Length: 164
Image 1 (cartoon, rainbow, N blue to C red):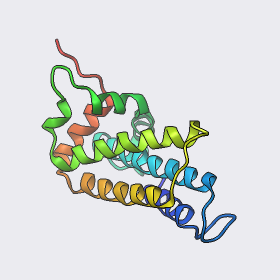
Image 2: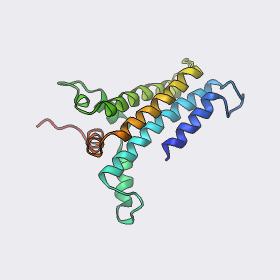
Image 3: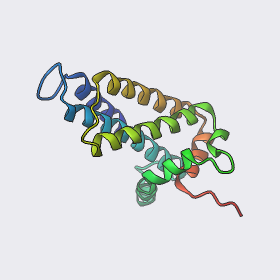
Image 4: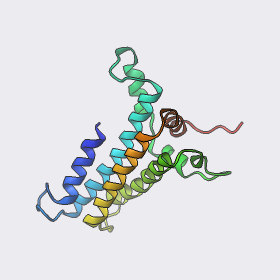
C-alpha cells in the first residue's frame, strides 16, 4: 500500500477534482478522504516497522517476516502507546518529529472514526485538506528522524512496554 497514493486520492476527493460533483465534494467524498489520510499514516508506520526490523521486503528469505511485521501493527496498540501517560508519557523521550507523527496519527484516527462511524458529523473541505497537509508533514518528519529513533519507535508501537 503506497501512502503517497492514498494521500493523492484523499486530496483529489477533498478538493473536488474527482467525484460526483466536480468542485464541490459531497460528505461521502470528504469522509473517504479523511479515512484515506489516516490510512496513509497507518501504512507509513507499518512500512517503517517492517523495513527497520526486518529489512528489504523484496528479499525472498525475509518476505514472510516482512509481511508478518507489517501486518502486526495494531490500530489500538499504536493509539495506546502514543497516548499512555503512566507514570509519564514514554513518547516524550522520542524526538519532536516522531512525537508530531504520533500525535497526528491519533488525531487522524479520531477523524477517521468520525468519518466512518458518526453519521451526524459534517466535514468541511478546508478541515480535510488541512489534515491532509498535516499528515504529509507528519510523514516527512518521521522519515527525517534518525534510523535508530525510527527503529525504537517501531519497537515502541509494536510491543507492550514491560515494567519488570
